[in-house]
Every structure is written in C-alpha cells, then in structure tokens.
Amino acid sequence: MRLRHQRLLSTVFARQRPGALPIPAERGVSAFTPAPVLDRWNADAAGVRPAALESGDNVITMFDVIGEDWWSGGGITAKKVAAQLRAIGDRPVEVQINSPGGDMFEGLAIYNILREHPQAITIKVMGMAASAASVIAMAGDTVMIGAASFIMIHNCWVVAAGNRLDMAEVSSFLAPFDQAMADVYAQRTGKTAAECAKWMDDETYMSGTTAIDRGFADELLAADQTKTDEGTKAADRSVNDVRAMELALMAGGATRSQARARIKSIKGTPGAAQDTADTPDAGGEDPELTAAMASLLADLRS
Image 1 (tube, rainbow, N blue to C red):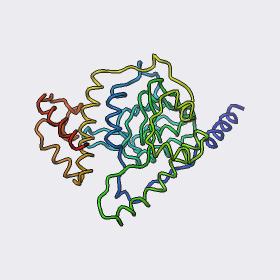
Image 2 (cartoon, rainbow, N blue to C red):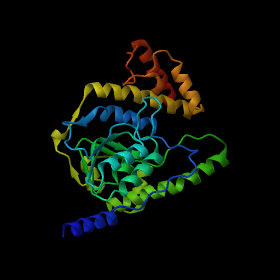
Image 3 (tube, helix red, strand yellow):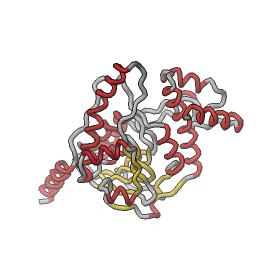
Image 4 (cartoon, rainbow, N blue to C red):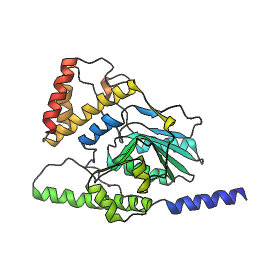
C-alpha cells in the first residue's frame, strides 16, 4: 500500500511539473544576467543565508551565480546539481536559492534536471531568485519565499554585436526560449502566457506576497529562517561588481577574453578563479583603487 501511495505521489508530481525547456545544442551564444540585476541583488539580497543550518543531507544550496563563474571559481552548474541529486537518491529534496541568476541556458538545464527528480522538491527563496534562478525555482512542487525576498523574471538577455541581419538572427534565436519560459511561468501560476510575457518584457521584481498572489510561490517563509551575514555580504558584492564590469565592457564591444584581460590588468582587482583563495578579495582591497573601479563601472553603465 505504501509503495502504491509513493507511486501515486510521483505521478501527481510528474503531472504538475511543466515539460522540459529547450536548451541550445550549439552554445555559441551565452545568456547573462544584466548588470542592473546584479546591482539590485547587491543592494537587497547579498549575504542572505539560512538562519540555521538545515539538518539532513537532502538540501541543495544555490547561493551563487548560475553557471560556471570565472571570477570566483564557483557557480551553480547542471553537472553539480545532477551529482547532488544522485547522492540524495529517491528522496524529497529541498533547494535553497539566493542567486542573481547568470547563464540562462545553464538555468534551463538545471530546471530540467530538477523536474525529472521522482520525489517532491521544495524550493526556498531565501533572498532573491532572479533571471535564470527564477526558472530553476519553477521546478519546485512547493515554492516558499521570504517576505522581503524577490522573484525576478525577464526575457533572455545576451550580449551581441553585428549588423541588422545579425541582430535579426539573434532575435529569432532567442524567441523560442522566451516563449518557453513564459509557458512555464504560466503553467506554474495559472496566468496566461501573454500575461507572463508582459511581466518578462517589463523585467518584473515580485516581493514575497506579490509572488504568492501571482502564483509564482505558495507560502511565506517564517521571518526567523533567514539572516544576513555581513562577511558574506561584502564578498558577494565585491565579486558581483567585477561581474558587472565584465558585462559592461562586453556591451561596449569587447570580447569576453578582452574584458577579463582588461579587468585583470588593474592591480588589486579581485582575481580570476585560478589566482584567488577562497574569497575573491582575499588579498585585501586598495580603497583608492576600489573607488576608481566604481567610477569606471558607473561610466560604463551610463
């Protein structure tokens, strides 16, 4: 009887979860989180973590950008999540998220991996689930969110260069991914795909209560389940500023390798993964250099 009950639950979960999202076979195009989203995460969600460590070994934490991160050596990847799920086995899973997003296509892959898990998945949005991380959150059978937390959705965002024909080709390439995301949001929320597409067009931030009202989440987390760690907050902000500068340079026409080389050439800049210790600013910061970098980043964004 118990086995039959488990099978019935698995069938219900499989019916409720949307279908797999498309992932490009050719990864020549990368989809990023825009710099203003990194700024918002710096202001509202950096350093937010669980108030206490969860017991058990079935908890997956996503407190980083989505996709491999060249600057910190970290990042949440589909490969890592798949390995964690294999280790957890056929048991319910809790996924804790505080992420500004990152590589949208990596987020789609993680979503697909989570939705295939045979047992219930509970998502907890601890600070922010933005961009690619919002897609991952939709894989939950239950989505819980802090009252001061946010879910942010937008269209697939890339950095591209070329003439009008190139831009038209990029637009055509991105259209099915935007439609697929709108369909997943719609299936999760009960809203129409057109409504969700409009929110994506507007790059919409939803607080905890708004996310629940619109169907993106199911219930609020208790107020005492999250805290802000000041040390982690400083580290989060430091490396996010460098990520934003990389995107700004690319938007100005630099290749990714050129942007990274230019940032690395500034003495004292938080280094790339192969050069750093556990934290991006482990070597300490020069206040004058930090101010100069902030000024440069502001100029690039304006």
